[in-house]
Amino acid sequence: MGIIDASMRIPGTTLHTSLSVGAIKDYLGVYTPARASDILLEPPADPVRTWRAPLLGCEIASHDFEDPVLPARELLMSRALNWALPLRDPDARWASPDEARASMAREFAGMIRPRVDWRAPLSDEALALFVRQGLAAHLLTRDEGGEGYRVDLLAMRRYPTRRGLQPYGARLRLSPALEPVAIDWEGSTRRPGGVDWEVAKLVFRASVAAIVTIRDHALYCHFKVANAACVATRGSLAPAHPVRLLLRPFLYRTAKINFDGYTMLVRRRAIFHRLFAFTWRGLRALYADALSSFTMRTLPESLARRGVAELEGYAYGEDAARVWSIVCDYARAQLARDYQSDARVDGDAALQRWWTRLRDTAGSALPLRGVAGLVELCARLIFNAVAVHEQVGGSIGDYLTHPGFAPPALQRGRAPEEMWASKNTLYQAYMLGALTNLRMPRVLEDLSGALPDEHARACMRGFQAALTAWARELERRNAGRPQPMRTFDPTSMEVSVSI
Ligand SMILES: [Fe+2]
Image 1 (cartoon, rainbow, N blue to C red):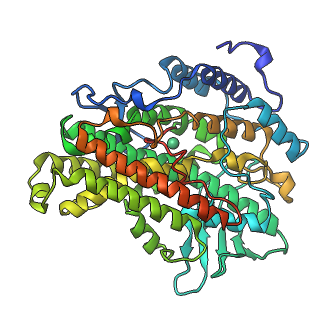
Image 2 (cartoon, rainbow, N blue to C red):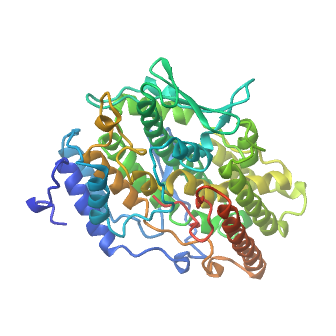
Image 3 (cartoon, protein in one colour):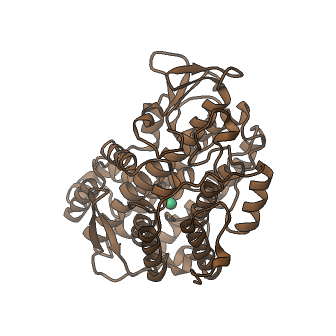
C-alpha cells in the first residue's frame, strides 16, 4: 500500500486524506466489478451472523459467505488510520472552480461515473431541478394549508459543527410551479437576487448533501431497510423458502457492504465524521434522531404523505412511480405460485417470524396483511435496492463538479466563494464517490443463474422486459425535460446496494 511514501502527500489535505485516497486508488486498481454470475443460487444454510452495532441500536449482519467488498487488510488499515491520525479541517482552497474540476478529473479518472451534466449548477434554474429531479427530490413536500412546496432542513441547525465550518440548516420554499421563491436561513427569509440569496442557496444544497448521504443513504437505505431485509431473510427463512429465493439477488453482498460501511463511514473518526462539518456530538445526535424517526412506507404512501402524488413537472415522482409499479408486478408474479390466498400467508409460520425480525431490526415494517401485503413488502425491499439506492447514493459525483454546488461541508464565510468546499473536503468527497462506485450486478444482466426454476426465470424475463420498455419511455420523457433525469434508468440500475 506504500503508506509511508511521502510523495503521496496531497498538498492542502490532511495526512489522513492523502493516505486514504492513495489506499482507495490502489484498491480500485485491482477491484473486479461484481457480475450476475457471482450470485450463488444455493448459499450455505447457516443463518447470517449478526453483531449489535452500538451507534445504530440494532443488529447488523457482520459476516457472510460472499466475497468481502473491502478486504480485511484495507478495513484494518482504515481503522488504524482513523485512530492514529488527528481530525483536522485545513482550509486550503482551490484557485478556481476550473482548477478543482481539472484536478479531480485527473486524480479520480475513471473512478467516478457522472450521470447528468449539471450546467450552471449554482443558478436558480439548477436549484429548481435539484428539487424536481435531483438530490433533494425525495424530500419535496407540499406546504400544509398552502399552495406551495418546500424542502425543510431547518432542524439541522441543532447539530453543532466544528470550528471554522458552517452550520447546516435551511428551508427552501417553492411556488406551486416549483420555482424557488425563498429560503429561510439564520432567522431571516432570503429572496432570489436579494441579500445573501446565493449564500442561503449554498447552505441549503450542502444541507441536502449531508442529510441525504448520512440519513437517507447510510442509515435508512443501508442500515434500516437493506440490513433488516438481509438479517431477517437469512436468519428466519430456509434457503428454499419462496420469499428468500425471491429476495436472493437483491441482497447480494448486502451483509458485507453494510458491515464495511459501518466501519469505513459511520464510526467515530471515520469518513462521515471527517467529511461532514459536524462535531462528534452533533453527528451522534443526528444519527439518534434519524434512527428513531424512521418509518417504512411504500412509494405511493410516501408521495401521498408529502402531498406530491399528482404534482405536474415533478420528474422524480413520475419516474419513481413507474419503477415502483414494475417492481410490484414482478413481486406479485413471483409470489403468485406459492401464495394463492391470504390464508397461505397467515399460515406460514416462518414468514411470520421473518416479518417480526424485519420489523424489530428496522424499527418499522409495512404490515404483512395477506397476499397484497406480502407483495407490497417484498416490492418495498426490492425497490430499496434497485431504485431508492440510486436516488440517495448513486450520483454523488454529479454534485461535486463544482466546489460550490452541493459540497458535504462548507467553510465559514460571508461570501459564497469563501464558503466553497476546501481542497480537503473535495478530496474526501471524491474518495467517498469512488467508494460508492464499486459496482454490483445490474438488473438487466442475465440473472437466470440466481433463480431456482423456470417459473422464477420467466418472471425475471417479464421484469427485465418491462424495465427495457421503461428505458425507452424514459428517453421519450427526458427529451421533453430541461435536463435529463437518469436516476431510475434501468440500464445502470444495480440489483443490490453498493457502498
Ligand atoms: Fe450505498
